[in-house]
Image (cartoon, rainbow, N blue to C red; front, side, top):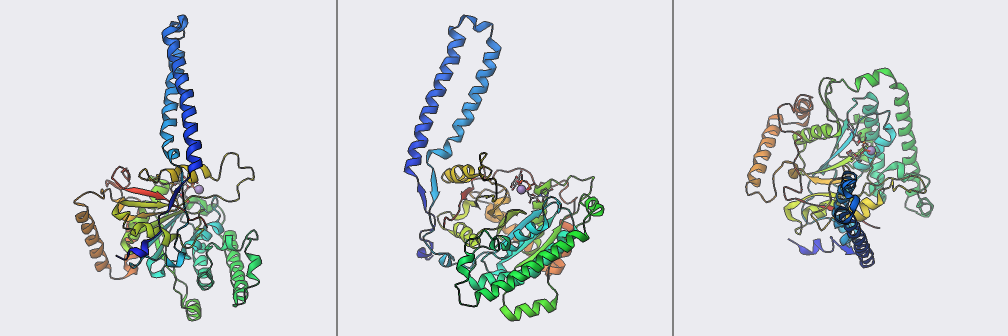
Amino acid sequence: MDSEAWQGVYVSHVRPLQTLINRAQILLHSIALLLLIFYRLSFFFLNQQSKQYFFPWLLVFTSELLLAFIWLLGRASRWRPQIPKHILLPPEKLRPQLPPPAIDVFICTADPEKEPTLEVMNTLISAMTLDYPPDKLHIYFSDDAGSPLTLHGVREARRFSRWWVPFCRKYGITQPCPQAYFSPAREDHRHDISRDDGFMEQKLIVREKYEEFKDGIRDGTKKWAGEAAIRSRVDHPALVQIIRCNNDDEGEVKSRNEIELPLLVYVSREKKPSHPHHFKAGALNVLLRVSGAMSNSPYILVLDCDMYCNDSTSARQAMHFHLHPHFSNSLSFVQFPQKFYNVTRNDIYDSQLRSFFTVEWSGMNNLQGPILSGTCFYIKRLSLFGISPHDKDSSKHIQDFEKFIESMKENNRSRDFAVEEAQHLASCTYENGSKWGQKDSIHKLGFSTIHWWRIS
Ligand SMILES: O=c1ccn([C@@H]2O[C@H](COP(=O)(O)OP(=O)(O)O[C@H]3O[C@H](CO)[C@@H](O)[C@H](O)[C@H]3O)[C@@H](O)[C@H]2O)c(=O)[nH]1
Ligand SMILES: [Mn+2]
């Protein structure tokens, strides 16, 4: 393997000042705790009144011991605080020498009233715009409400992507989310005017298309609002559909740009009031099966509907870790921070979750890695099978599974046939009596994980 290609990828940097402050704080806090423990114990053994107040003191003491223990466990991530440093290679060189592995992207939405369709579609578009070979990217969009508005939105998003994706590719736009890119708050708009490569004309055209896309969503919102939509949310059949555009549109844009878009599959699993649906976990299980039958990519990106991709190179960054010889086969997932924007100015409760992601998650990188935050992570499909990476039989399990998928594909022959199969996999009774969704800790199996973000 060409080792040059891997140079400088994992650069984490321990912060000496922060380490000193944290350790001093840990020391002071520990002294205070020891004094407290001494004080409580001395009450039991030295105080005359201890018999009278024995139980209240014991209760308080036990709680304090418990809290102190929890506090102690939390220090692990602060002992060696570190930040990931710049990747030394520029993004265009972030391509591993190996052919890039395929990625399935899972996006879940549950309710078009609580999760505005326009925002959700922006997440979908951002995933379609990831800087990755389109034939290696497959997007599975789960709609738990089975809403015609959401399906309409997905179609509109697909249509707009044929303008947006080529534009981003051609001009190297790294912000893949159109809403964020066209936001007046974005500072780069000022520099755009000085470009003389036809950029401004194209930008205006795409901007206009974005407005048309928004109008399309607005029309849909008016059309499908109301009672009927709400009722079907808990009771509807499975629907799996590959979203394509009509041929006329497709031909027009293809000849202009010759850029293909990733496969986009709309999945609305079956729901019945009499069957538990297990919320997001249930939706992800269905996507895992449906994608297994259709593309079965070795890596999966999971996104909540309101968590758009903020950096189009994230897929390549994640794959660099996954394919890196240093991490070998034991890496389960690469977790990107879950960032919230537009929270209040004085964010006194840290709604942006900065302490979580910049301190705790990064601090766990050398301790087998952080736990999942639930969104924005690239996970290895095999690590979800409950097999340890150190298990001698693991390759046999994997071969068996791959044989099963291959035989299914041979039987199906075409993707359209796989859609029929997928519909069955999305039924609400499929998991009955099976081991689907049973708990198995990734870390306990021996996998490691990484928290990562590129500071630019
Ligand atoms: O029946 C359901 C319920 C939720 N979702 C989706 O699941 C995601 C997360 O749900 P949300 O209501 O946004 O939960 P949050 O509390 O905001 O999410 C945090 O906490 C969840 C677990 O509690 C994690 O799964 C999320 O990743 C994490 O962002 C969203 O995309 C929902 O559309 C479904 O697909 N089906
Ligand atoms: Mn959420």
